[in-house]
Length: 191
Ligand SMILES: [Zn+2]
Image (cartoon, protein in one colour):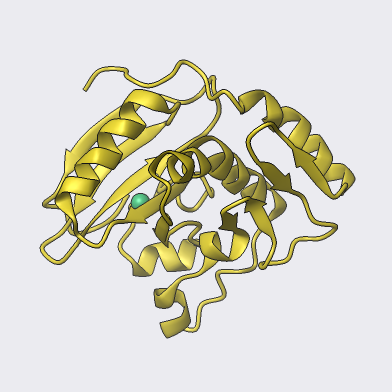
């Protein structure tokens, strides 16, 4: 599909200062629309944006079931997850005005292997999240087309298997985002 979406995330200018703030370990950075919280040290209960916590981006039932520690997360991953929350997930939350359920955010390489993710999955880099809409295909289509038209994403995939479906969305940077979107509803492994 063609290149849709905004040329640039309106909050992208915050991201370079954000990396600096995170490095200097100052407490928080505010923008007109929301607050980005940067903790003194990484803790999983920290808020990344108003409506997203680091915990939500790291939590995995599969990791727990397999005794995998998905919380040992490098600093660069937290920065990538922050970009994803600021430019993709928080704008979605604010547009649809309802909780956004993340079924898979960051995956350590072991976890990614177990869930059948592709080896170069952006989940490993903290650049991707899967949004779960309870299998509601109408809402999935609404989310998919809104993201495609309004956000500066890297990849946007309406994915699914015989059991369930979800929206995979990723973000790298304004310069590197490829704006690729497609539907892949018969797949058994996730991107
Ligand atoms: Zn995914």
